[in-house]
Length: 262
Length: 279
Image 1 (cartoon, rainbow over the protein chains, first blue to last red):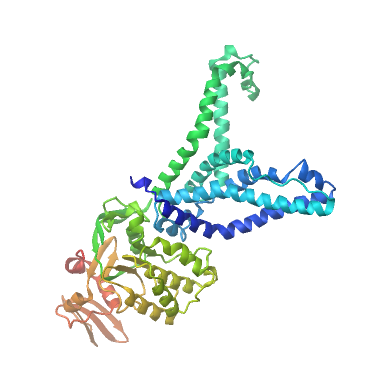
Image 2: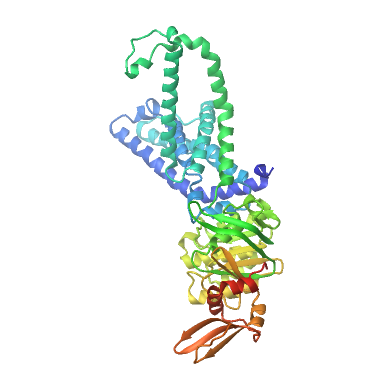
């Protein structure tokens, strides 16, 4: 099928092109992130808490999650920024590769290579910090353990979440990150309140009732009575999140990209 | 190489731009696509390039629907738009990363064009002026040896020496298996280069003809008195001299393109009937 044209050698060419085109942007943003972390480090050092900054309260490794789930997701929503630009979009669409190869290359860059890059960055930063610590305090601090399984798990969850933000990048012309974050937050609340209301109306006899009021508290009851009934559903949701969500959004992005025009 | 059959196109919330447009572009030619502002020249190029969607069978390039944007077709079709973007790369980086997608890319040809256009051999593309970027992109697109080259206003933004360099480069680069479509307002810049000429107006192709054929059937006269008669297609007065485009046996030399364009716009039905056929 035309939609699934994929040639590994061409995918690699697109990937190399993406890396080359984004390297300057990545380097400047890395510099920015390093500067922020170092400013926090210096401010903490001046307040006399430099040791706790690295060893206990806020280790460098703890930046991995925030950098991925804030920085990475933000960058992901800009991954297809160019297709919405009048003077840039033709470059993407006229590049002799299939839409799948182009999508896969950008997804791979932001979903897989970016976490590796962040981990490497934190490793180097923690090594430098450890050296500074050794010079000023006479003892080294922990260096980020690159091969820890924790990072693998965080990266896995990031890749799944990121697929939605990649779709947002394809779909929205401007401010994709904020629009998508707002929409998901509103949807999340809407769905939550709908089901709470439904549970109140349909299963009121199972829930320890407070008297009816227009207040939002009325919806909040002790829902633990449903725990056993719905445990199976939680497994289904978990399965959907871990195995279906990302492919679904990747496919949606592919279809949207194929339909996109300049 | 390019076949447009019953092409319909309308921008959202706008009147139809093309309605049942038919046209064929054949290899070995440099087509001049002329038209007034808003006639749809750029839109037509974008449809051919697959950048705008039409009915799947309406626009076909190299026997494939252009809307599919197939990699093999894209490697044989290069589009240089009027408003373009150059990635944050040096010339060498750009060359290394982009040339790999074009199987017949000719590196020595590019070096020759870079010399001809007097461009720096390896500099940051972002440090180039608009004209330099345009010359580089044109040089790159010609060096791909792609079979279809779509150039939108290639001479816009170029200085006077660059325009003659451009003519020289374009004229010398076309091969028999290639096709070039140049959309332009600057007909004087493209003089002696484009042939055949396609004139687009009001969503219709008013003229699609080779210059030799036009030269055989049209003539130009100059007189102090305004010419009259059924064979007068267009008259232009300059400092008391009337220049007219007449139908009938010509001298074999095609009228000046600007004059021809005005004649076509002035008498669209005549030209559609005689020269609006598919190429």
